[in-house]
Every structure is written in structure tokens, then in C-alpha cells.
Amino acid sequence: MRFGAHLPLMDFGGHPYSLDHLVAYTTAAADLGFDTLAVNDHMVFAVPWLDGPTALAAVTACSGTMTLATTVALSVVRGPVPLAKTLGAIDRLAGGRLRVAVGPGSSADDYAAVDIPFAERWPRFDESVLALRALWDTNEAPFTGRFYSTEGLSLRPAPVAPPPIWVASWGSDAGLRRVARLGDGWLASAYNTTPDVFSRAHADLNRLLVAAGKEPDAFPNALATMWCYITDDHDDAERVLHERVIPTVHRPEEMLRERLPIGPPELFAEKLSEFAAAGVEEVFVWPVADEIAQLHRFWNDVRPLVKH
Image (cartoon, rainbow, N blue to C red; front, side):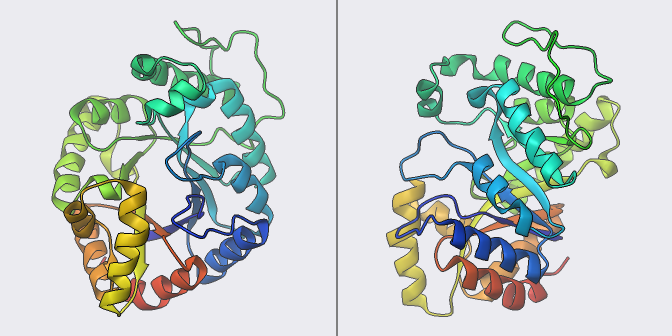
């Protein structure tokens, strides 16, 4: 199992939102040995959310050799042409280290903010992936659909190479069919699944990949939004859960207790070991407080306990 780190873009309370903090976080992740640095995407949210592509571009120079990833980018909300231009520039400035995971997003507020009907998100999303491929790969024919067209467009400078495009899905039948049809990889969500649920979805996806003429063993996956806080102090864990996570994530407390590792290193390692056994190849951790210190705790106290 490999490990990535989410840039701390979401305000769980008292967030500094400074370039110095993002640089220090990125430098720590690179020095520790994390494989990937990732950013998530929202236009508007219940709490402040720093713009993902902007933040990723800002820390590219101090990201070492880490893969840079979107987990996810909202290809419908942003539009495939603006997104292709922005991410193509990041890939070129990073020397070809970008991996792009896309999804339609689940927030109607994001769609209202850019005046796109939320009901159109799925057909628009399918077209947006095909449009991104056509915009990034000069060997691809132009794409023309109901909502988008790349006819006559040349977004230069191009990425170093067309970035792989992963498709996000929580694991529904329709979502997995979309992953198999459109994606170069599958991005799942830690707070929307369990090891058992992931294992069943992974088996279903493998069958769909075979039907689509793709090799399951060569089709990667990852688990995003693993919000976490490592502490040996029970009261400290309860404080973080009730003051930071529950008010921000807006999910039932028992679900969050089950799915998010907030507590001792052994708890986190056990969850990761179960996901590894279920077939998860990479996990993106997202500390909800004391972010840089938590990266160190994860790397030194949790990672060695994980059974791959």
C-alpha cells in the first residue's frame, strides 16, 4: 500500500490558510516519503475551502518527486476547457507528474454557483472526460457532444504527456460502469465506504473491466478523503471528533466513528490493513488538526504497523 497526503484546503477550525503553511506541509510530506500530494475541489462549501488547483500550483516547486493529483477535480463545474488549460499548465510546470481524478461532485450548491443545472451533471460529466482526453492528446480526434466541443481548439503548451484520468465513484453499479468505461483508474472515498463494501465493489469493477477489454491487474485504485487525527488521549480524540469533524462533515456520528481513524496509531493501522486486504492500493490521508505534526505521526507511528 502506498500513501498520499491531501493538502489541508478545508477549514476544520482555526486554519491558517497561508502559503508558508502549505509549503511547510508539502515539504514535510516530500521529506517523509509520501508518494502523492493531492487536492480536492469545491466552489462553495459549508466551511471555507481553498481553491485546489491554485494551491497545487503554489506548492509544485517544493513537492519533490511526489505525484501531484486531483482527488477530485470538478470537470463539469469548472468546464473541461478551463480545467484542461489549468491542469495542463500544472503538469508542464511539474515536469509531467500530474494524475487527474475527476468526478461530477455531489453538491448542488457548486452547480448553482456556476449556473449549470444539477440534473445535467451525469451526461455532462461523461462528455467532459472525453473532452479532456481530446484536449490533452493531440493524437485524439476532436470531441463534439451535446454539451461540449473541442473542435478547432489547441491548448498550448500541452502537458508533458496526456495525464492519466481516473474516475471517482463511491461504488454504485452505475458509477463503477462509468469507471470501467471512461477511466484509467478508480478513486474511491474513505468516508463513504468500508473494507467490505470496497472489496465487493472492487470485484464488480474487475468484471466490468474485463467486459470493457481492460486488464484488471493493470487498473489502479486509491482511497481519498481519509480524514484522520492520531492521538493516544481518548479525551483529545473525542474533542477533535465533536469540535472539528462532526460539525464540518455533517455525517452521523456513529458512521464517522466507524470509518474515520481518530484515535491511537493502532486503530488507524488496523483500518488501513483491512483496506489493504480488500484491494486498496493507495490511501490519501488528511489530518484535521495539527497537520504537519500529524503527517510525522502517521509516517512514524502508523505506517510501520500496516499489514500490506
